[in-house]
Amino acid sequence: MADLSSFPITRRWPAQNPDILQLYSTPTPNGVKVSIMLEETALPYEPHFINIGQNETWGEEFLSLNPNGKIPAILDPNGPDGKPLALFESGAILIYLAEKTGQCLPTDAAPRYETIQWVMFQMGGIGPMFGQLGFFHKFAGKDYEDKRPRDRYLNETKRLLGVLEQRLTGRDFIMGDDYTIADIAIVGWIRALTGFYGAGDLVGFDTLTTLPAWFERVMERPAVQRGVEIPARP
Image 1 (cartoon, one colour):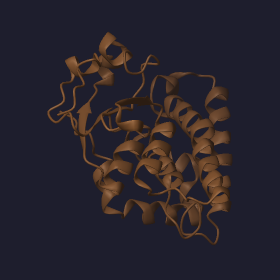
Image 2 (spheres, helix red, strand yellow; image 1 turned 180 degrees about the vertical axis):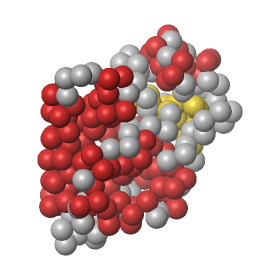
Image 3 (tube, one colour; image 1 turned 60 degrees about the vertical axis):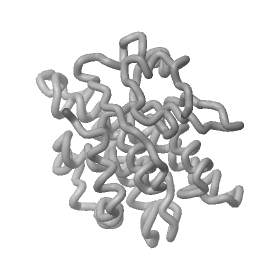
């Protein structure tokens, strides 16, 4: 049995089965990237719910794994060279899991880097912009009389949706016929934008064609349907 006792996070969230990958997360748009990927690959793992509403990511145990205090993070007892690996940042975790399992990432160099390119597009554009729009549309920001901050993120969100709409023209998935970590990285954010943030009408999501069809296609996958609910909220 693997010994994970040197990782302080396991004292706060003990591993019931230390021989399998440990996931520390919350079912947010970033968090579900990893749970969806784990469900798609059928890699054994143990999920631990991290209550971000109670600031559990800022406790010393979680910070010992991710000093940036954000979910998701993983602890893989079977990392490179057979040694445990602690990893944070959802995009990095997606690439790691894809390479570990040989799934959802092309092996040929050109399509591999193109796939990673679209993951970075989500990390650097979709995530930050959609999240800010959500703040100004649904949360405290909605009470600001000055709507220029909201409109800044609204316009950028519409632009990013347009990029996706164009990319998906004539394609079933971001990379064409193959479902990859690029799709996994993006789907949770589209789900949050149109669902949790309630901004579908605001951004004119229903006026698009290829993006909504792609979203339905990805959401129909059983692994995606499971993954968006993991870790289960108490």
